[in-house]
Amino acid sequence: MSNTGGLFTGLQRPFSARRKKTEDMGKADAGGTGLGEQAISESTRQKVEAAKQYIENMYRVKQENIGNRYARRSALEKELQLEGLPESEKQQMLSNLEKQESNFTRLQRQRMTADDFDSLRIIGRGAFGEVRVVREKLTGKVMAMKKLRKAEMLSRGQVAHVKAERNVLAEVQNPYIVKLYYSFQDEEYLYLVMEYLAGGDVMMLLMRKDIFTEEETRFYIAETILGLESIHKAGYIHRDIKPDNLLLSREGHVKLSDFGLCISVDVHALPTLAEGDEYNDTGSVARGCVTMPSTSMRPQAEQLLQWQKNRRQLAFSTVGTPDYIAPEVLMKKGYGMECDWWSVGAIMFEMLVGYPPFYSDEPLTTCRKIVNWRMFLAFPVEARLSPAARDLICRLMCDVDDRIGTRGGVEEIKSHPFFYGIDWANLYMKPAPYVPRVDHELDTQNFEHFDEDKSGSQGGTAGGGSGRGKKWLAKADPNFIGYTYKNWDAVTPPGMAWMFPWEVEMM
Image (tube, rainbow, N blue to C red; front, side, top):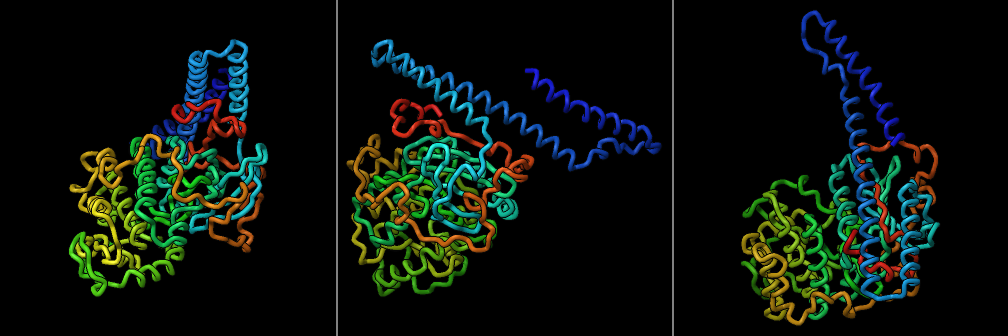
């Protein structure tokens, strides 16, 4: 407490001095123009606000850590009572917990940098930064590090987006969401250190298989729905669900993420679109969710070939691919969680047909098609979809008021006939329809190959880490106060997670 008092005592003096100075300036103003408040510069106000946010965040985190520590102790004691273990074993497990708590407390005090990790290989690169497979030096754990340039975040107005990404990964502990171990920053970059999912993503799987069976589609869409359900319960909207963001574990299960660095379309940069706007593709004359013969549109095989040719290029372009974005998002009418269900419908269409429903070589043309979805949403006659699959897609890709899940919530979607036989509660325990080939923990064969940046701008131990020099000592960035995060699982020894299975529910 003495340290805290000293901190505030140190802050009070300059504030008092400034207040007295402004009062004197006000008195000296013979004209009574009231310049007292104006004498405090905007820069000073920003610094005061940043200091306030920093202190409030520091104490909030400390309070949360104390609460979580008591909760973990209480949960373990209750678990041990139910197990009926001998007293000696109970004491040993409680002692093990206290050791982990001590390790976690030390971790909380440690200031992390990119130099705490050995860089192994790049598995993603985009306009804002890159993703690398790294190994934590202290524990030897293999992880994925996403690194984002602060300057790009600020100049493109992405601060709120990157904060939301960090928040949802930190708050939502769920088997269908990629696990976040750490988030931290230095003078130039933001870092997210997550579990490394060596299975790749659904986009790569689609490129290999072209089309999924309905049984495969049912599995992947069901797991995607469960991931979105957990995000929605926490009050978040993903808004950019697409195959690139559906990662696969070594066992083939889906985990939602955004670390593919596939740039989402900047909706605000697009012209405001409305139904009936002109469009560029005159070959499609569909009317609603129907089947059209291939003579009225590109044959399915030709469309699939063109899509495969451009897919990766579009995904990693600075424009991004808008194929899965809901019309209400593009029309800037305001949107809710229902926009994610539209995206699920678009992904399901691609899984069963081979390409997204509104694909065009030009992203803006795709946007116009989405807004005019009644004219363009059609199933090629070659696609043999069951009535249940067709019905679910049509009920996901329609007006918001008519969309499945809008009124009945996620349970309405789960109860659709297409998901008949799905064991929602135990789906993650079921074998996946496809198990990726992963030869070892550092295997990256399921990701695109990226060459190291030869410009020299990525230097440092983990590709651009600022190290422990001047940048490590840089002042906290007021734009990203509260960005730092450390997960309890980071101090769990490999193979010991079974000791505290309730942690996922508590964090």
